[in-house]
Length: 289
Ligand SMILES: Cc1cc2nc3c(=O)[nH]c(=O)nc-3n(C[C@H](O)[C@H](O)[C@H](O)COP(=O)(O)O)c2cc1C
Image (cartoon, rainbow, N blue to C red; front, side, top):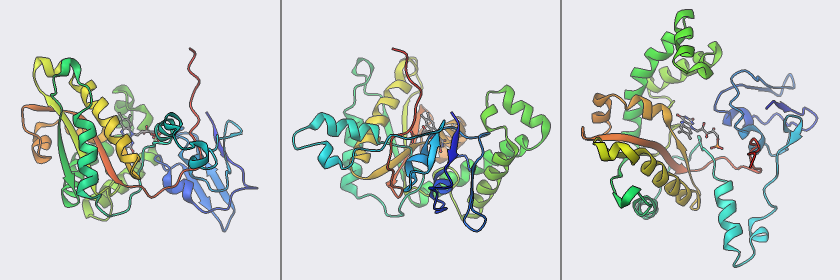
């Protein structure tokens, strides 16, 4: 899918560039430049969903607007329509207000995870909840590992290695340079390359046993999705962080994150009051059903 900006509509506000996870958008009001670089774009639609002017096109077409007002769209009692909109409007959020969600909100979110179905009702999922400084510390710990991988990718041989191990999507010099800058800034404490300054990170784990291995990750994924939807219903955004999950493959890092040695990582996600406002649904491929 090819994303482009209609410069007749664009106001050069820069919201799309700020929300782009791949940093492939250049917006400059002075030169009236608004360009989406297709190489490196993961086609998530965030640029189009966040644009107040509706200036972003996917394959030449606008994205589908949200219903005008959810209260109109979901008249009293139409719980199904309300719930569907809640599910369909839940996005991966990478920009948060600094405030910590209240204990009551966090408890409700954790409750939704706790009561989610597990294979054979094994109830093997557990959560580690990190807050504020603990999140920053984990991001710094991960950064120390990640910077080595990014450095590797920044030389031609390493770039080839990234492609061979299936990380070809990230094997682009400008993207790696951008990661390098953000990881260095994370180590300096001026940003958070992995958790986007979210005030809360949840790590769902399952036991490192034969039983746990069979459905442990599935159980964690189901619980996580319910927790993220419960959060979204409260205006609390979330984002799954696969990079953190990969880094926590290391037992040493798992210990630093507060995960006991008998547990494996099922899923890691952020939580925090959502800053971006989205106006539209993302464009996704049709399912041939
Ligand atoms: C398993 C999994 C791991 C992910 N890991 C990351 C991550 O490490 N960093 C990140 O910014 N987004 C991560 N994402 C978010 C995806 O990139 C996201 O699904 C994509 O941007 C589509 O956006 P949407 O969820 O807003 O529709 C992850 C998503 C999934 C399902």
